[in-house]
Amino acid sequence: MTLFWVLVTIGIYMLSRKLSFKWASPFTNVVFLSTATLIVVLLLSGQTYDAYAPARDAITTLLGPATVALGLPLYRNLPILLARAKRALGAIMLGTLSTIFVAVGLGTALKLTDHVLLALSVKSVTSPIALELARQLQGDAALAASVAVACGILGAMLGPTILTRFNVTDPFTRGLALGTLSHGIGTAQAATEHPLSGATGGAAMGLSAIFTSFVLPFLLPLLF
Image 1 (cartoon, rainbow, N blue to C red):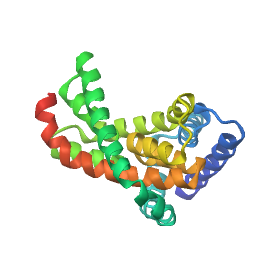
Image 2 (image 1 turned 45 degrees about the horizontal axis):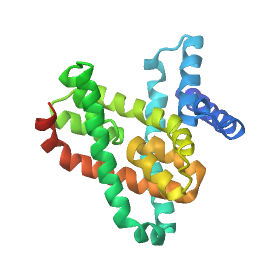
Image 3 (image 1 turned 135 degrees about the horizontal axis):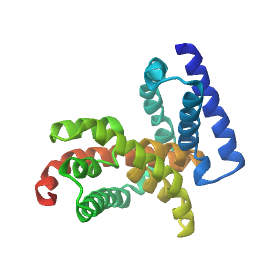
Image 4 (image 1 turned 30 degrees about the vertical axis):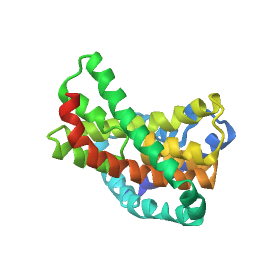
């Protein structure tokens, strides 16, 4: 059954990818559409998530090579990235800090618990780092990872539309925004738009995660 569900997942992904290219919409985002379709298939087939877990684990092993593969567009676009590095670093730090303050500020206004606020504070870093940060900060690791994935999907769905609405068309800038705020999922979306967007998104994703890991432990006492 593991091989069957792996093949089903790949098939759903390929179909979602074709639909996303044919009908560009936030709701045809590959990650969102694939996830929603797979959930529907599991429900209709009567299979539990535990039954699907071995296939999930098999596919998850490919995340490492996929992440390393982000280094290829970085290498190919290295001269452009280095030429705009200073401004990009400033934008990444500002974007990282603003997303932490806005997320925690909104959560505080809504009177959410400290566990939820901590999960929101790491929402824009890739889920493995969000999970580990939450553990070190005595938060709910599973919740933090879930929030990070959810925010990544929402950012990849809505980010391109919002950027286009504000006439942000430069591939470098679009990749920077998506990678900083929506980590790997946003970077994957950026890569479908332009190779430079994917390269910039990959750099932004990594740098924002590093910056968050260093600064968040010092910020939390001021935020909570």
